[in-house]
Image 1 (cartoon, rainbow, N blue to C red):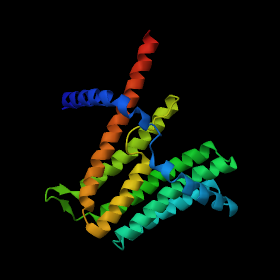
Image 2: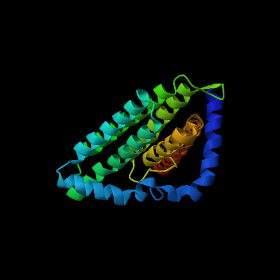
Image 3: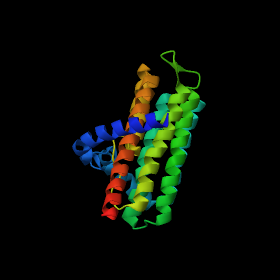
Image 4: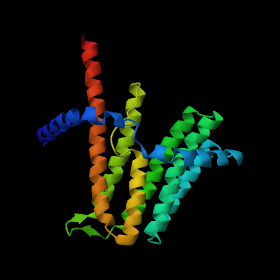
Length: 234
């Protein structure tokens, strides 16, 4: 079993090494958050006027993620869920924007933001978990398994970046499904699911997208570690 996993990892490494050069510009360059940056800055300036601090903005973000959970777990309303997830994503950008505009960036603020981000993702996926708990995709795949795998991998994507940035200088925001893309995907597919259904199919695709992103990011970090080890030995 262990040898099989190593073999699969090596195959993935070869594939991602071949594609790495073509997608290298994805490092923080083509992100959904840049599309919404003008809106985020506008809201951040308004929040500054009413004396909202970065940490309070983070708490507001968490509150909207809780509302997304409530709207789906108790009212089964995908449209309201998608709206609250969208606002969660916007507020996720506002705390950082407020910190930059007011020069109030702190190490605790960065830690608090990252910690609350993980909790907000838990609430969003927990809502999806309850909403889809009795559903089976294509009569063979339990939706609870898909959602659990998606949550776990989504958290590992963010964790791998945070862990790598502790040891190395550089930007490790690589791969397709960063946090802003994950939230945006859930918003769009939830709206489509509300009007046309197919939410389970979209969640199945989401699971593979985040797994692919995690593998890509893991191998990216692995290659850097290997390069550093080689330089040390020389």
